Image 1: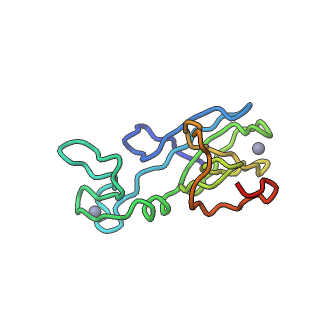
Image 2 (image 1 turned 60 degrees about the vertical axis):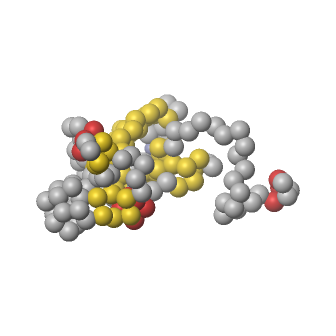
Length: 147
Ligand SMILES: [Zn+2]
Ligand SMILES: [Zn+2]
């Protein structure tokens, strides 16, 4: 497998690199070619020359085909090159462009091609003061008691 790193951020809807322990990872997600007209790559809607980054859909600039954000993103592939923090080897893998919980932190996950270790690309966030989420359907640890 040989991944091609993007030449420009414009080719991607996601790009990130970071150190993970003794390793590091660079990950990106290419824009998807419009499945309808196949003439353009989809992205967040552009209004008056400005990208609506908070839009909840992706749209084709050519034909106007629109896909809901979650559905669109889950159809994409995350590509990553890394130095594995566990085995120290360099590799490249692909994963789902969908955050999963990794040690409690929402992360995109790729699997080291050498040692099968999960390499998380954690969401960059400020640590919330109150970690409790109301109505979240996470598994409650019974050792923590109720509240
Ligand atoms: Zn289109
Ligand atoms: Zn490894």
